Amino acid sequence: QSALTQPPSASGSPGQSVTISCTGTSSDVARFNYVSWYQQHPGKAPKLIIYEVSKRPSGVPDRFSGSKSGTTASLTVSGLQAEDEADYYCCSYATNINVFGSGTKVTVL
Amino acid sequence: EVQVVETGGGLIHPGGSLRLSCAASGFIVSSNYIYWVRQAPGKGLEWISVIYAGGPSYYADSVQGRFTISRDNSKNTVYLQMNNLRAEDTAIYYCARGGITSASPSFYYSYSMDVWGQGTTVTVSS
Image 1: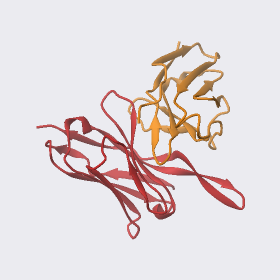
Image 2 (image 1 turned 90 degrees about the horizontal axis):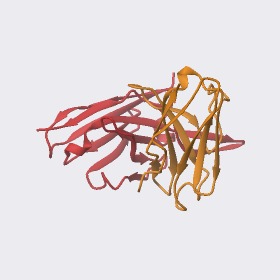
Image 3 (image 1 turned 30 degrees about the horizontal axis):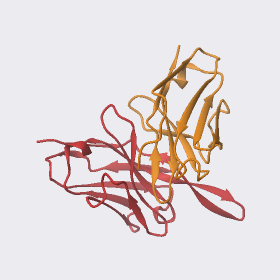
């Protein structure tokens, strides 16, 4: 049950795009299309922004998009806005358990 | 309104026990997956347990044998019984509802967490 690997930080200027990677294994990310992404602002509960690799819940802006290739999933935030500055976590299903990523802090410059 | 509310956190000595509650409203817990996720101070999210709609429950290795998840359908509440607590169990504990995807005419569980509570803080210290 090792955590999925994410870069500790990412940054971009307003209006730019940032992509966060999430690397797992053949037992989790590669095996199942059940990768989800969560946004967490300081002192707040996490919020679901992507599920099943690339689906967005109602109310989540289409600036957020997800994809997957092999053992690596990715989250792209396009048209960065100040409110996108937060921590982002990926999560994958892995046969009766879920595994979170190590988290990425996104800074809007 | 669909929501979950966690209660039961507090300060507990190492080796002690605590029971957290996750009270749901706006949906039926017995028809949903309910997850417990924790976050140690300054650290990332850690999945620790799930109870499926059909009843099976699963645990992370870090809590297996010490934590037990259960459900009281009459109270629409899920519990996390935590025994033999250790300093490393200190964290904010969140419960979350598992997401469901419509696939007309049926549905399936998407192994995501779509409704989160505000969390309850557990501090294990002597």
